[in-house]
Each structure stands twice: as structure tokens, then as C-alpha cells.
Image 1: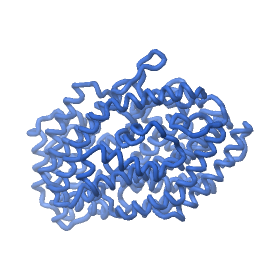
Image 2: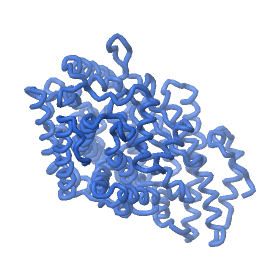
Image 3: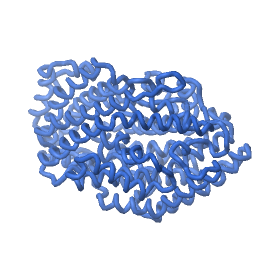
Length: 577
């Protein structure tokens, strides 16, 4: 290559397009042959990774501080300028490679992905995709600005999480109701954003010549290994196997708390009447103890996390103006991941960091692949990396392993985690089934009241055991508070499918932890070079939607919960489970 690109992605974002154009022209004008294919692909990969990292660096800037107007200006300028042009360039280069009939080694899955991406690409969709990103940022700003006055201080809604674990039921109820009231104040604003987003999504599908947005999104998300019908099969399996298990958990909680019915503010308080787990006092302590756990799981993985701390690739504390939720992204040119979270001092923060750490390790392991195209990891398996890490790390939560807890406290933490998995599957079914309903019935979904009704029906079907009487507005608007629906449509069933894979990885670890970790790492290193069933198999699991596989997982989890409850009650360490 004669043209020169910068080494810094943010520098590229500031370049006028005229400085980038010579590099693009060289790529487009090269006559491809077997002799120069790999060098050409490496040059394209470098350009793509610079654009990709520039986007994510700018996205991080607007999520760590949604009030930063300069960060928002730079982000939007990049979307409207370089991102649009870079997508057009990528499309032309995809078509050039596909037309050549050449295929480099270990590239069959990336080639399949490139064909699908080329198939749905339309230049007229680029401004619409940018508009979709911007609508997502508007949603984040609305949610990030939600606060209430609690104990005399302005408090974000995520910062109320510790209150929901307090033993004082009146305080829990008061905090929950105030948070629900504050969220409902944005009901109309979110409804308006929703209508705008649906219009954009319908137009994207129409421009691509597809019957609906679900068909468009299926190709965009590269879902080749399962269909919407498989999702419905998974929902039915959850209804058959997991909903009864969830009811058992809720009923046990109701009885132990001595309540007539279980209200939404009763779901996180400790069953044994003990004070909530407070695993750390400072973010540095959270990072240090999590690092120790990662080192116990695998020294190389621990070393990756140390590198992230060294290069300040963690932003973990919650604060006003920060976007909600948590994520891990990869800066693909620098070959470094970044973790974003909203930690407030509860055990869930530990689980979140273990989870996002799994994503970061996936990035590190796949960075050994030569081309960015090979690092396009299917989300269904990306979540096995994160959820699997939560379970692989579980034996090392205790203080004697460098972690956070006494053995009895660790048992409580693990009970909380395993129960949360069982309770998550029905909720995941609500979120995923709701989205299928939306895009099968787009005219109805354009009216938010119909969305409320659909969400309410699904809630009654899957979320049995909670009493929401008198709280109907808060219940039926739950879809407004699930960020994925608004910013990453259809990205949710992956969590349920991956959780089933992660439980299988954990099952293997109960027999041989070291062997299970090694299989896990080998699967991560495949990046996106194998189909989803092959990635699951490499990790020692099966990609499944059926009730029988779910039943095996649920039985293991319920038996383990029974063992852990004995430890939590007695305070003795017990056997590792």
C-alpha cells in the first residue's frame, strides 16, 4: 500500500474524507489474485478496524456522559460523515471479493456473512441507520436523566438497587413506587420515540425488499442457524419447564418472608433475614477482587483483566448522566476491549463485571485471528462467553480465594445468581415474544396502548408468582424500560439460548474445572469462524431450544440450590458445588 492511514482511530475520525480516499482507491483498484488476496484483505481489515474503533470510541464517549454536548456532536458528525461513507466503501469491497471467486483460508463463515450483508445493503438505508443510532441515544438520555430525591439526595434509579435489598419493607416499597412514578413521567416521550423508531425500521425493511423488519433484522444479525419458529419453540419450552420452577422460587420466597403475596419490591431482599450483601466499598476494591477471581479461573484470563486495568479500559461506577446498563465493546484496531457498567455496591455488580469480563476475554482470544471479518462473533455464542464466565468464576467468590465473601455469604450470592438465571428465562421469553408480536403486527404496534396490552398478556403468561395488583401502569409499560427493545431490537433471545449453553459449560466444570475452562478458551479463540452449533460444541455444549435440554439444566440448578441453601443457613463451607 502506498497510501498511509493513521494509527489512531480517533485521528482518522477527524480526517477529512479526501485524506482517506487514496487508501480506498488503492483497495478498489487492486486486481485480486490468489497471490495478493491475503495482503489485500489485511489492508481492508485495517481500514475497517480503524472505522469500527472510531465509532466505538465515540459511542463510549456519549454513554459515559450523556450530557456531554461536544461528545454528542462528534458522534453525530461521524455517523453522518465517515460512517456513512465507510459503509458504502465496505459494500463495494464486499462485492469485489465476492465477485473474485477467491476465498482465503478459514474464511467460509465470514464469506457467508459478507454475502448476507451485501444482499441487504441499500445506500438509501445508510441515513436511516444513522437515524436509528440517534434515536437510541435519545432513549439513553431520557433514561440516564431519571432521578428521584431519596434520603435527601438526588439519586439515579439504578442507585436504588441497594434499597430493594433492605429488610425494611416500607422503605423498599417507597423506593420502588417513587422509581416507578418517575419512569412513568417519561411514558409519553418514550412513546413518541417508539413511533419514530418503528417508522425507521419499517422503511429499512421496505428498502431492502423484505416483507418486514424481522426478516431484515434476521439477516442483519446473521441468524443462519435458527428461525423465528425455533424462538417460539424455545418460548414454549420455557413455559413448560421453567415457569413452574420460577413459581416454586417465588412461592418459597413468599412463605419465608411471611407475606400474603409477593410484590415487586419483595424480590431482592434476603430470604434468611440477613442484611444485603455489600461486596465492596470502592470501585478499586471491586476491580482488585474480581481480578483475583479471574486469576484463579485461569492465569492468562487474569492477565487480560490486569491489562484492562492498566490501560484504564473500565468505567464501572454509576453516576447521573451516565447511560443505563452495561456493555463490553472491542476497539478492534487497538485490539483492546472496554467495559462499561453502572455499579452501585451490590452483588449484581460483581456478576456484571464477571459477565462483561467474559466478553472481554472473548475479544482478547479472538484478536489472534488475522482479519476483522473473522471476529464477527455471533451474539448467541458471545453470551456463552459472558454467562459461562459467571458460572466458571463461582467457586472463587470466597475471601480465601481472593474474592468477596465468607463461605456462607458466597452461598447466598450463588443462590441469588442461580435463582436469577431461572427467573430470567421467563422474562427473556416476554421480551423476545413481545418483539415478534411487534414486527408481525406493525400497524397495531404503532399504537403504544396496543404494546402495553401485548406486554401485559405476555407478562401474565410467563411471569407467574408476582402480585402487581394496583400497579397496572407500571406493569404494562415494562417494554418501555427494556433498553434492548429500543436500541438493539431482537437482541435478547441470545441471552436465553446462551444461558442454556453456559449451564452446560458449568455442568462440565463440576466434573473437571480445568478441562472445562480450556474448552471454553478454545471455543472463544474461534471467533466467528464456525457456525453457532460448532462454537457451542467446541465449548462442550449443545445449541438447543427443546424442553428436554432445559429440564436437565433446571434439575441441576435446583439440586445445587438445595445444597447451597444448607451452606447459607449453617455458615459452614460445605462441598464445592
